[in-house]
Length: 137
Image (tube, rainbow, N blue to C red):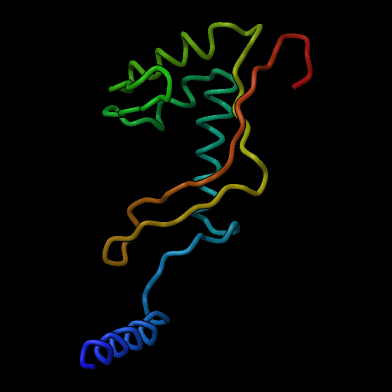
């Protein structure tokens, strides 16, 4: 059958070309990109979210931010986002939400356009918990 032979040729052609396809893999943990993003993650979450040093968080956030929260919905500006952090995350130090990135879970995938790095995707596992005053985390 012509259709069956044609399918076999296409399948074989695809299999032979797969090794030559350019893919973007996770960067090494020793790379500059990985270290830079891990440091920015720390500024954003450790300093900003966990320690409520909003001034450390502010330069990392775009003015036209759209933040989608699973319970409170969309926040459509940097100003509103930072205000929400101050009012909801940082207002009660007796029961303070904390974000913890799980060790060895951070993955960074570079994004290229015609060979030029323009961004990266960050993937990782984190936990949120409530830190209570006078109690160990």
